[in-house]
Length: 424
Image (cartoon, rainbow, N blue to C red; front, side, top):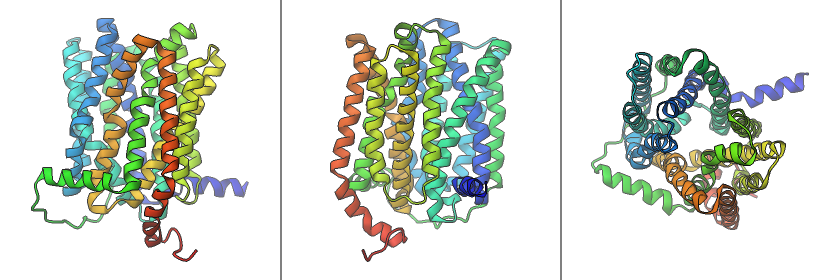
C-alpha cells in the first residue's frame, strides 16, 4: 500500500511545485473546453455544408498559421516576458471562442465566419505554443523534475482528449454546438486566473540590437547546427508529416473497412488516446532523462509498425489494439523529444527552438494531411498508411544510427547539469 502511494507521489512529483500545480490545474480545465470546441466545430461545419472539402479547409486554416508564424513568434518568446505573452494569448483565445458561441447561438453563423475565426485562432496558437513550451522550465524549481512536468503535460493533454469529445458529443445532441463554444470560452478563465496567480522571477533581459530576421536566422542556425537538436527536430517533422496524418484517414477505416459508424471512429480515437495516456504515465514514472534518445528511436518504430498493422486489419478488436500501440509510440516519441530539447537548449534561444519544435509537430501537419489525402485518392487509405509507417520506421533507423553522435555532443551538457558524472 505504502509503496503504491510513494510511487503515485513520485509520478506526480512536478505538482509539488506551486507554479506548475497552478498551471496544470488551469490548463486541464481549459484543454477540455478546447477539445469540446474542436469536435463541435467539425460537426457544425459538416452540418452546415455536408462538405468534406470544407471540413479540410477549416482544419487547414486553423493549423497553417503555426507553420507560417511560429518561428517569428519564437523570437518574441525569447525577447519578451513569456508569462505576459501567455496571458494575452489565452485571453484572445477566450474572445475567439465567445465570438463563435455568440454567432452560433444567435443563428447568424456562416462557414466564412468559422474559417476567419479558425485563422485567427491559428495565429494565436502560433504565438502561444512556443511560448507555453518554453515557459514550462520557469515553473519548475528543480531541473530534475522537468521531464516529469513534460510527461504530465502530455497526460493532461490526452486526458482532455478523452473527456472533451465525449462531453461535446452529448451536449451537441442535447443543446447544440453553440453551448460547447460557450463552455470553451468560459473554461479559459481557469488558465487565465492560474497564470495571474503564478509568480515567477523576472528573466534577465538581454538588450538586442539585432533585427528580428537576424535572430530568426540565429535560431535556425543554432538548432540545425547542433546535431542532437537537428536530428530530434527532423525526426519530429517526419513523424508529423508522414505519420500523424493517419488521423485524417480514420473516417475511411471506420466506415468503409471496419463497416462501422461514428461510434466506431470514436472508439478508434479513444484507443489512441488511451495508448497516449499510458505512454505519458510511463514517462512520468521514470527517474532520469538518460536513455530518452533510445526511446525516440524505439517509439518511432513502434508507431510505424502500429499504423502498418492497423492498415492491414479488418477486425475492430485488432484495429483498436493497434491504435493503442500507435498512441503509445506517438506520445513517447514526442514527449521524449520535448524533454531532451528543453534540457539541452541554451536559455536565450529556448523560445526559438521550441517554435521550431511547434512547427515540426503542428505546422507541417496540414501539409501532411494534404499529402495523405492525395495519396489515399491514388493508392487507397490502407496503402497510404503502409507507406507512412515504412517512412517512420526508416526515420527511426536513421535516428538510431546517429545516436552515438547525439550522445557524444550531449554528454558535456549532462555533465554540467550534474545528470551524469564526468568520471566514468
